[in-house]
Length: 151
Image (tube, rainbow, N blue to C red; front, side):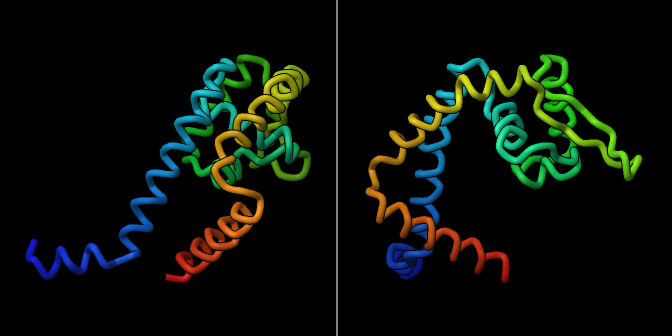
C-alpha cells in the first residue's frame, strides 16, 4: 500500500465502522452462543425454536429467511428438533406443497424454562449502553440496513 492509501484508510470512517460492527457482533454472538450451549442447545436450534415459540407455526420454506439460514440447513435442523420432540411438522390443508413447523408442548416447556434466563443474559451483554443509546443504535443500524438494500 502506498502512503496515500494508508492515510486515506485511516481517515475513512466507513472502514472503521465496518471493523467495529464486525467485532461487536462477534463478541455479542460468542456470549449468546455460550449461554445457549449451557442450556443444551446450539444457536441454530434455539433460533428455530424461538421463532416458532414467539411467532407460531411457520412454513418450512420461510424459516430460513427469518433466521438467515439456507433451506438445506433448515431441513437438517428441523429433522433434528423433530426427532427430539421439540417441533412438529404439519401439512398445509390448503396447499400440498407447503409444510409447516410448529413448536411442540415439549419445545414450549424447554423454551419457557430457558428463555427468561437467556433474556437476562442478553440484557447483561447489552448493558454497556443505556436505554437511550440502545434506541439510537437500533435506529442507526436499521437505517444502515435499509440503505444497504438499496445499493
